[in-house]
Structures are given as C-alpha cells and as structure tokens.
Image 1: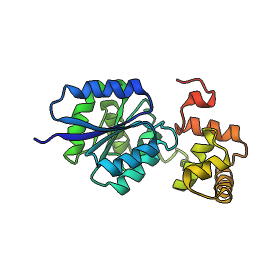
Image 2: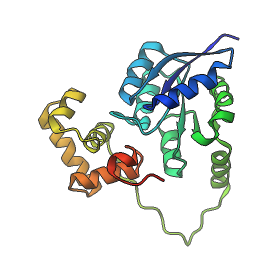
Image 3: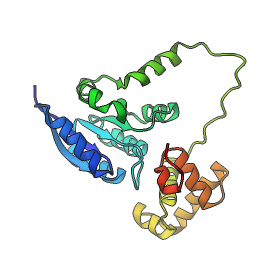
Image 4: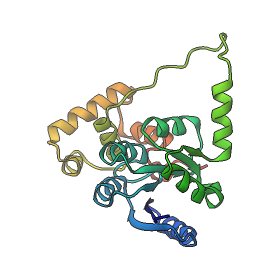
Length: 226
C-alpha cells in the first residue's frame, strides 16, 4: 500500500511534535506539511494536497471550522480529521457541517488517530468512541414534544466569521483589512453586521463570544480554561 500523505495543523509546537512521533512508528504514513494557523493550513493544503489533514479547531487567524470549510471546497480529495480538546455537541455538529470526515478528542488520540487516518483515507467517517455513542443515541432518540424548540442559530457569513475572529484576536480594522485583502470600509461594514447579528455591541463582548464558541482559546479572552 502506498504511503498516506498527512498534514498536521496545530499552533502548539509540542502537539505537532507529539503527533509526528506518534505517526513515525507507522511505516505507511508520511508527514508532508505542518501549519500553525488556519490560513496557513488552507494555503499548504492547496500546495501539497495531502490525503489526510489533522486539524485543531482553536487556530489563530482562521479557526479550524472555517479552514476545514475552505479546504474541503478547494481540495475535495483531502480528508479532514478534527483533533480537538472540545467535545461539545455543537462543536462536533459544526465540524461535520463544514465537511470534516472525522472528529477525535485529544485525550483519545493515541489510540484512535492511526485508525482514523486509515478510515478516512478509505472514504469512511470516524469518531472517538464517546462521540460515536452520543451521535448514535441522538439519532435514535425520539423527539420530546414537551421540549421547547431550540432557538435558531445565528448565521454569520464566512467573511463575517473571519472578521469576528480577527477582532477577538485583537486586530484593528486596518490590520484586518490588510490580512483579508479588503478595504477598511468593507471591514467596518462586516464588523457592524457581526455586532448586529449577535446583538453584541462592544469588543469585550465579541471576545467573550468567540471564546465561548471555541473560535479563539479561552486564555486569549481572559476566561479560565476548563
């Protein structure tokens, strides 16, 4: 069997080194690229076209969900494995919605990652066992007519989501414009649309929202990590 080409996307060097050491023992897996931000991941995915991409979610400049969405669209033959410390249902559902083929929690990566790489390369989905059980239970559960319907999720456009993340990371409008190749006026328009949609009209509130949604790490927002 030919080598499986893999790209690792994580902004923590110690995590990337650990994953490389874990996969080095496998004779048919080759690490072809590493990325330290979501934006770099998109660029390198288009350049190297790896068969499998291991993706963290809380990535700087462009979070893992949006990076996954862009990669799946640009390089459809690349299969994305989300590897995250987040195991909340909304994070998992959002990852599936943007095209991730697998979702692993970091605590189980040592035992599940190699299997997940082979499964997604063969066109299958894969989830950490606790997540797979929850998905099965949710699929089989009959709806409770007494439960109130969930509030509709706020839908940001991909560009608005990018602007939100950069605002939360402390970028000024001019810096966001330069990073995204937009005019300052366009950035200001996106910024106002984000605030209007979320009902949040101060920077501190946007930062807290981004941290709560896993768009940025909690430590960047001054929120104690769990």
